[in-house]
Image (tube, rainbow, N blue to C red; front, side, top):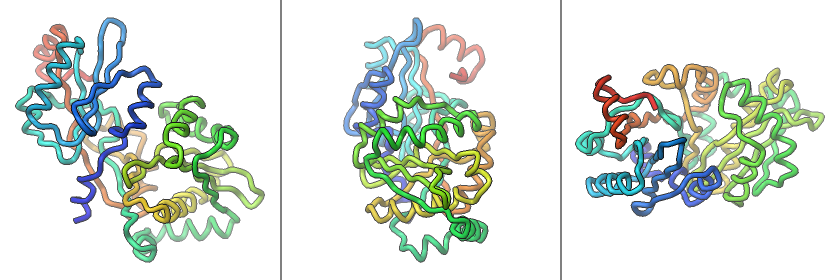
Amino acid sequence: MENSKINQIVDIRQSPQWGEYLKYLGWKKHSLGDCKNIYCRGAGPLTLAKMQRPVNLNANDLKYIDQLAQENKFAFVKLEPSLEQSVDDLTSAHYKISQSPLCPPSTIFIDLQNDTVTLEKNLSHSAKYSINRAKREGGHVEFFNSPSVDLLSQVYPALKNTAIKQKFFVPSFDDLKTKIDLWGSECHIAVVKSVDNVICGTKMFLGFNGNVWFMHGGTSEEGRKTKFGYLLLWESILYLKSHGYNFLDLEGKDDKRFPSFTKTWGGFSHFKERFGGIDIQYPYPVIKYYSSVLKFLSRLYNSAIPL
């Protein structure tokens, strides 16, 4: 039953706010209908297109994508299917499996509709211990809805340094500010502080359509010496539940199907698993080539080109 509810979740990458965010990044939107958005942009002589977690695409939708591709001279379309998507329909439309995801191919959902007792019961023994230890060490969490630019400037160093340390994409300050502006009251920043009120860690969450996604996180050097990260996520779960969200997507865990893409994800995956969520594995991303050169190379190697 839990998984069937998750299957119905409309991904944040199909939200109006995400469309405006991609526009800020230089992408152009085409829509096949509600929550069936495809985005394209130029890359040198090529025009690339992507479609991330759209609601289930039928045969007519896939034909319309072909039409858009011809009209806009797409070199290829990379599609990351939703959980409800018929893979057979994609195969029939000549999409090939890609080994290069653009967004996390597996993740963990926390069911915020559970009562607090159940949420706490789902915590691992080590998570409970770490949360209590963080409290004993004087850690405390503060939350900010529609956070200010001043707050962002305070937490940005931890976000940036953690992204560099984990070898993730490093979002610019303006990138994060744009998200805050676009999501407004559905943007939440959680901050964990030491007993001396020094910021030791932070998380940004974005809500859409009754659910919420962990989007960015960071920990200071001092914070890494503590168990404050456990307290930060636990208090965030309770906070987001109190705001009426149904599910929290922790946005990514390691996936053996994509060893190169997720090879550095083991540590934070293990951390997330200790909160007792629901493991979800999305279908393989797929790709369809429209460029004659890419079609030839694909036939030559008898597989999808890793784009």
